[in-house]
Image 1 (cartoon, one colour):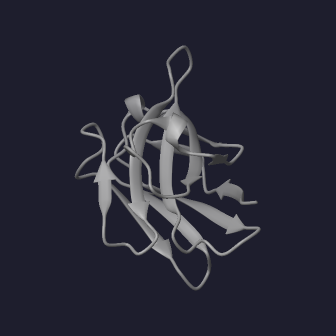
Image 2: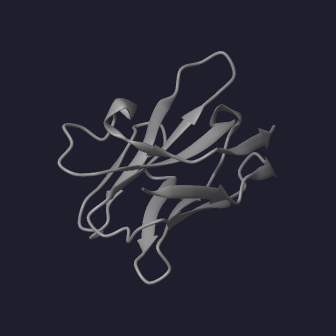
Image 3: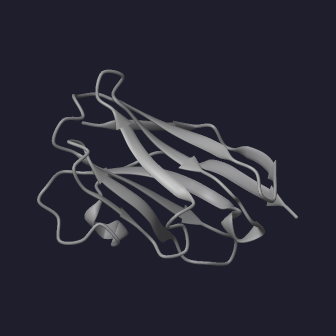
Length: 125
């Protein structure tokens, strides 16, 4: 069983930066596909970014490409989401997720079996 714990959310001004962390426990994170999703009030959960644990493959939604960077630390069993140039549309509850490969597509939240509780990111304009 895999447990995920997010941290690093908070309130930031537009144009600012935040880094979210996702600690993986319960088993080694090797071979997992790690993903970040977000859900704004009144909206459906949407894909943000994903990375294979090897780090060889990453994928981003068009809305965050060029501003967000997903990474993982093998030794600390932690995934990260570095978020730069934040704007009000980035305000949401951010979830860390993990999936056992193979998966069909990283943009579908149904492909991910494990989820954290979420961490709130609020961007003030």
